[in-house]
Length: 72
Image (tube, rainbow, N blue to C red):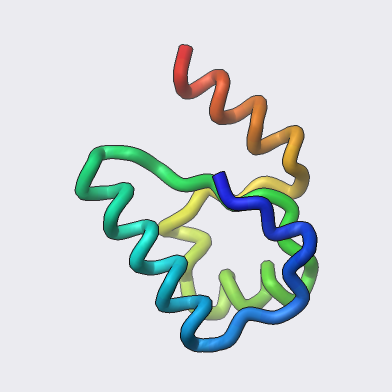
């Protein structure tokens, strides 16, 4: 899980890092959850279609609950 609550901007290097993490997780048959992205970050994730790669949750608590449910 990656907490994005304090992230205001993501540049190309940041997007590349997220994609790298996603590929590594997929190779291990894992998923990455993104928690609490701000409106600009969420819009960027939607524009780049990364919302189809990551589970995006509006809050850290929601992402935590989803992780626990997935593990059960």
